[in-house]
Length: 293
Image 1 (cartoon, helix red, strand yellow):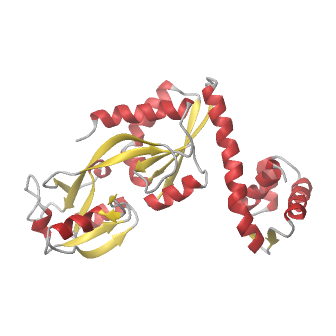
Image 2 (tube, rainbow, N blue to C red):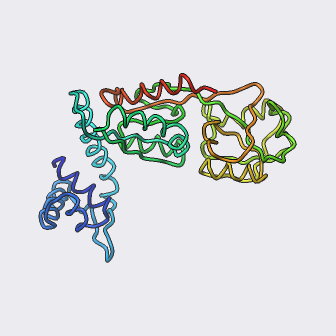
Image 3 (tube, rainbow, N blue to C red):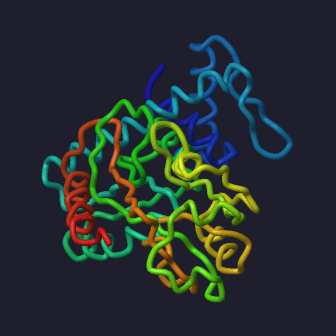
């Protein structure tokens, strides 16, 4: 089996169509079908099932596909890394991140990158949760990832900054005028919980710290996206714990915790970063060094 055959299989699955995959690969549909059949013969069984609309993986295909996808993406990353290390002034840098980082941290850094390396295009892959981010990075979706420190990540992890965690309440909340708030003062309050809450040593920080304060947080609503959680908290649904930079442009009251707490923001990857990826990481470090408030 060849890498090209794997690339053809990945394209068919991603496009959900032999016709669209052939167009994306700039090959004829007959050539594409021939290569898929050759791959199936070598594997020993059918990988794809043609449906009335689209295609789907067979049981054998579902077992085979993640490995083919990883091989194809790794080959693409290897080419980009080689070009970057060779001083290429064009190409792409793929960055995976969670939505909150994409809107809170990356705009400024991407603007600086565009001025410094206008020929190297940035491609962002955004995910709702840190778990999904780590899972997709393990599958080779991007050259590097930006987010909170991943749990049990086997590759390189670099701290690029720290974000201050704050409490979010509406303007008419009794706490709105406070300079800081202890979690113990919130034992009788309901909480807005978000999929991007900080996790420390495998446990959500809010659960651990509330337990230390002598209570279990009562959840009013759970959300996947930080922007949804902020709007819930601003409307008075419950108190929210989130990173300060995630609140840019949102109408709410933010109150530091007492004692203050900060969460590491990291860049992680499957291999050591070189070229454009390493350069972009340095820009993130520059921002993190001066934006720790």
